[in-house]
Image (cartoon, rainbow, N blue to C red; front, side):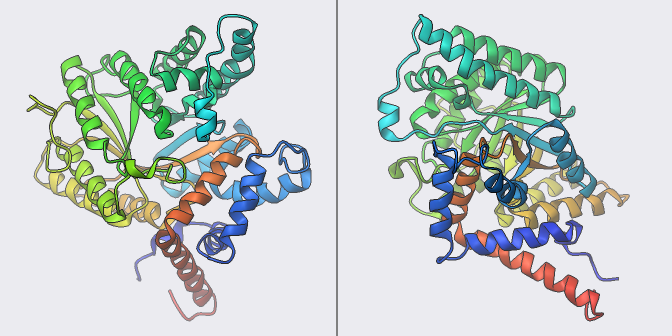
Amino acid sequence: MPKATPLSILPLSSIIRSLTITSISSSTLLLPPSLYIMARLAHTNSPILSPDTNPILRSFLKRTFYKQFCAGENATEVHSTANSLRSLGFSGVILAYAKEVVLSDSQHAALSSCGDDSTAEQCIKEEIIPWANGTMETVKMTRPGDFVALKFTGAGSQALFDLSQETGPSKALREAIDSICDLAEQRDVKLLFDAEQAAIQKGIDRWTLQYMERYNAKTPGRATVYGTYQAYLKATPSVLARHLKAAREGGFTLGVKLVRGAYLGSDPRHLIHDSKADTDRHYDGIAESLCRRSYGPVLQAAEGETQFPEVNVVLAGHNINSVRKAKALRQAQKERSEKQTELVYAQLQGMADEVSCELVQAGIAEKSKKVDVDVPKVYKYLVWGTTGECMKYLLRRAQENKDAVQRTRDGRDAMAGELWRRMRRIVGLGA
């Protein structure tokens, strides 16, 4: 019997929708106007252009781009999407509330504190509390072992100001974050503090380390809070090395979500590696060090460090070569009965399905073997929220496809190949 292809586990509707969207994203003719339209929709103040107030627009987006990349608008829709993924063989989901803020340079320069008067009360009531409630609801939607991704910028102007000044969160925001972390800990759900724009990333790193020290020291070898490290930034190896040192000195497990990077359109170019090859080399080098729990030529130890602390890893990436390298390394470790880093793989919902499905299919096949094998745990990252709330996220996904045209074309070709295979099978010309 011919071996099933990785994409054979997906429903036909998903194949057709993915093929349509990746065809647009990889077209030099169709992508620019599509990005322009999405940018208008993401930043509009017009009720006609808002998906939340225009039912015709909402219906179109909900059935196309939203359905491709998002989990749903409420708990019922989110649970349905998550259960569908689990039925395909995914280990679980990484769920995120869609609300976020992306700053221009002028907006960043104009940031100010909400103060201590009625303006502060308004910030708390209209920004912090809705964000906290949305994030708490996200935690409640997940199952034990799932992840919740958290964006501090969703908490509004006070959070943005605090992060830009690299101070601690305000009292109201701190209490909100504490409540979210406490609930996640109680429900055995892990929190991923997402990376954001370079203008506020140092502040995010500082907060993340503080919360990791507080929550990840409670159970040895187990992280509740994870930070996000972007391999396309030149400073990432040194930042991660400092955090590893802090984890060893503080006696807590460092939670690491490793990504290539998602802010090419807004981060200053000089902060980013000069080529994709440089980014790939740094991503693979960091991933290898985390898997081996040892420093190497890319992830070098901070001054005076020799020991590697406990780490838990989310290896988030759409590059099939990087994923295969990590999987092969972990299988070799398993065969040698070496201690393995706690690690899961993750890809964005609606993207790199050929990568995710290869891992899922490998996991299903390896579970049936009687020999000792490394069974990959695979998660999908999804956002939830109204169609309007998700527009900024959808715009970033479209921009990411623009910046990774070859990968998008690979995805398009994979979907086209799978659709052709199914058509041939229907007429009796293929397996």
